[in-house]
Image 1: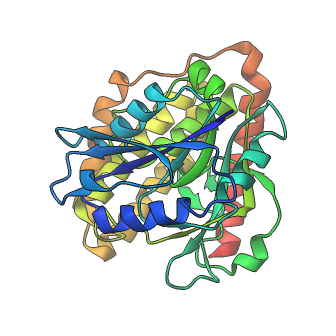
Image 2 (image 1 turned 30 degrees about the vertical axis):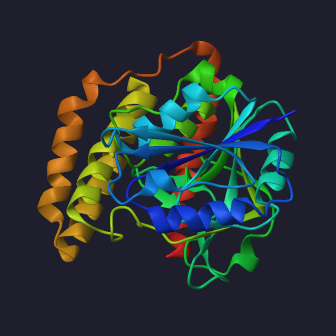
Length: 318
């Protein structure tokens, strides 16, 4: 029985996609369906095929964004689990097998994220799960540090959407990715909603992928990425924090925005960052806010404590 569908969103990434699929053809677990959602590519990406995999290519007429492509993949998924995988990755042979083992550990686990390694410096981490902090910063855990230091399974705030397995039954409960994000922080938002509902997100270091990073946007920092990430950070706060928690955290959130603005001023994107913050504040009321339930109060308290402790983890890393 096929338990998992692998969803790969793609936009003008033919060569990357071909390489990614080759690594999936070498998986120790072959009991999966491969679903490529192409966002209106013009580079021949829709011609990519696989001779050995159960693969379906869905060609969209235009770019619906990362979230739109992924949500279509979720809608088409009939298996109990879905793996979301970036096209700019190479998966180690045990990748699928280890993610399945991880998520089967408990029905309270919503997602399991792979150990994402730097494509060029393969002994260094790209992501070992995501941290979310009191100032509203989302941080890739362990980025740039030796992978050997992150060899143990552990719960994390959320899992990076670049290489992650999701439990479909929970997705139906908490909702899929918010397409208002278009791209960036949609995975954090999804993991946040799962945490509020009392589910766990887990890091699985034995599931390994090598990640190019920013292959679609072209660079780590650019005007579009800075704008979208800034805007979406406001969406995440508005949707997931109850009013009392927001008011308690407001001074730290304000300080977080100020520090990031100064950082992006040095990078030449200070104005674009503020434009994203302004649009996020202006549009946040159009987002679907997570309804506060007294039964989830304990989960909110645990999340707040994690926001506090994570800032110390980030500062010690720096």
